[in-house]
Image (cartoon, rainbow over all chains, first blue to last red; front, side):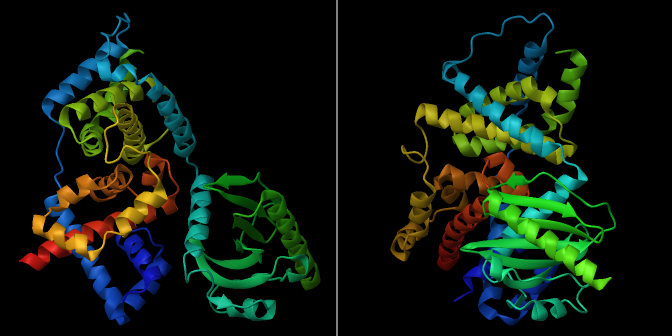
Length: 259
Length: 176
């Protein structure tokens, strides 16, 4: 028997999709677990077999010439009418609309800026954290347990508050890696929903940005004078905004009392 | 479109012709249909190239493959050719794959199925993630953009498809 949640990680690991810290965790497990180690070896053998047995054909030269000719004809300034499409393509007028959808969503994806990349990282961290066994390194609803746990693991001591009284209990915390640095991840619950709060020190002006919706998850981002915050959850936007407000109040209260 | 634009298109998109051809072939399972899909995909890509804002070979490749993939799936639906006549259903097909029991694995080993044959028999939604990952080397995020599904779905489809391929590989190893 292998550990099913580890298997999912092994695939992501071999595909180069695990963050460095998760990869290190997994390697530790693989070194000590015979069955999971065997699962990895099988996957490596499969990878090699696919590379050896699945054909990787190059496009025939005739196709290249045909495509180039079609492209020249389509972009000719004279706009000579293209010959009637082959039968099978008559029905493909509909495909145009599908392609437009693909192009439309691509355009968004392609305009990547640094903040887009960070958004993707936050989303990926949130999704990974939902995989079994990856949510919390320290499981506690006690802010006085969670906060000290970060000591020695981070170069800052994140503000940690429990909002159980408001229906958002603190569930735990873990280390994560975002924006090229280790960050604190705090996990809160709301009914069956989970909320990840990522924060790290950032010298910047206070401010918030418009909520984002990615792959069914809401992402909120704001900065305080001390910290950059990201919040990710499948919770509805209005509740998540309420939660963000609690966090902002908690943080500014903490800052005030520390001064 | 001005000729310099066509030159830019040929420089940016045409290098991915073979990747487009492979994906089209694995999805249509027919050489001449694959040629048609590729040609139409390139014409479509040329038409929308003005709106493409990606940078780097990876992005232009994924952008083109998304168009090829849409073309191939539309082609399949139109001609009612494919591994099934019903619309793809994640649950039904996933379970169908997962549920293939050792008994059928035995009969498969009698047939000495090659990996390529197993791949051909996978539902297209599973076949494409394997092709995009194992042959084209796309990242999960790029695959999710090409196949228009969340990254989590990419991961679960990859995992199920690999499970099936792994069984075939073990069966053929067992024979030697």
